[in-house]
Length: 463
Image (cartoon, rainbow, N blue to C red):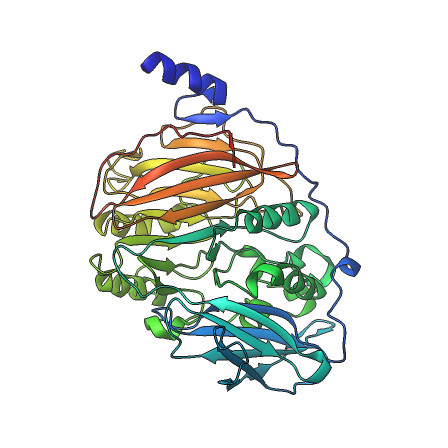
């Protein structure tokens, strides 16, 4: 058996000090941006656009619907009804709160946020925005009621941008027809890489992802490209475009900031953290997370998942050790509370770690090496959405022991939670017109079934 694993390892990639560095050479669409003209607004005067939804409470019975009207703030409402009401007779109306902002020489349209409450679980709803001939119709499905053995599938995408490669990633994800909610790991429009942080790129990004985000919730985290701090053009307010455009239910989890919050969805308790906000002891984010971990009920939501932008474990020379400060502060809690998975973006490649921890770290006695730890999470970097900055193809020459699999390719991932003990994880690389499975593994829940998983995956199968 061991000789077979060794042979397979060399076929899949190069065996290093740690796990596998894939030798796959990607053939993907280029990381060149799609022109603005290819993302036109919908036809019609003041037609609603850039429609996107996210969870609106902590338990999945509420949805925040957001959209932009370019000319007039009216109508400031949306209508919705259960899809099985074919005639839409029992329509409900919700008013929106409207905001605008200026960024250097850019003025936004009217940004609407409407929250629908008291929805039924596991139910398809239709909703309409606009008025008269400019009305646009969409739909979404609410999750099952929160419970320990509720199956659910999350899509995982990070650092998407709006390039031809980005479109390939999103089309491959949509083509799988498996994901029910996207865990989005930060870095949205990449407006900040353009002169004066060209905020029209926020508009084109919203139009680009509408084909997914208007129909299924995306759970958002802010990345470094959402900071938009540009004192040279007198823009000093951090996260200004992001905070105006993307609303999240942070108050439902007693957070004081939309940059860190939590939700429960199906059988998962998902915690969103901010890599670019203060996190040291006594800070608001630190205090909130300490209290949040104490609230987690693994009998209700057995899967404990963390989302953050900057990876804590990363063997790529790009952004190497940028997440070290947060790791030192928060990793002891990750181990204590038996976090199952930590997803991050930022590094524009793919990497999956072993279950390791470095909580024995001590600068006085030299203990600073990650070791295998059955109570530790697996750290997964999925920052490979396809953005304009291109692929991060500079892994460290010797793969560290903590790294199980890594590959410099664009792609997306799926996490299929089956029950309280098992979840199937699959990362898909982008290749031509086919979504190819590059890495897959069964994860075992750390609280209910803390069995060691197999390091090697059944990869390179066509999905």
